[in-house]
Amino acid sequence: MDQVSDNDGIRPGKYVILLIQFFFGTHALVSGLNWFLLFFPNRSPADPLGHAFVEAMIGTGLFDVIKVVEIIVGLCLIFRRFVPIALIMELPISITICGLALIGPTERSIYSGPRELVLNVFLMVCYGQYYLLLLRSFSSPIRPLWRVPMRDWLLPSPPQQ
Image (cartoon, rainbow, N blue to C red; front, side, top):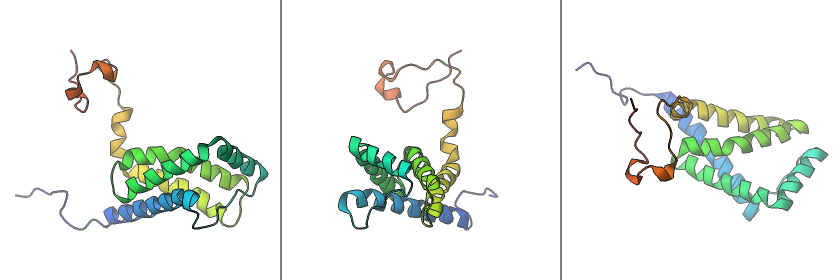
């Protein structure tokens, strides 16, 4: 009867992580929706190189894709669904935002750019157990998905001896 369950006691760290996740998700959702609905003025990077980079992404349509990804990531983080994959999806965007903010820093961007990357990496560390499976070495050969029966897609295959 001395077993300790995962739900015993108050774990304030869990709530801090959920609060940060909600904040980061809300930020991503608002940023993505703002591109299409324009409730806040869009800001362009202060540096000419950063401005040219963003203009090139807009011209090629890549910026629209990025904003759709931000909306999806924001919804995933807010509703706590597919959080580990959503954080992976957001990482290249966070790196780009941080890089653009540090190239031509302004009073606002010097904090908002690195904050974006720090929150993303922090949440990825908090969900680190989900990424461990990606880092393991497979002892059995990996088969393409189309050669695996559908019933076994979500089940790990037993090691072959």
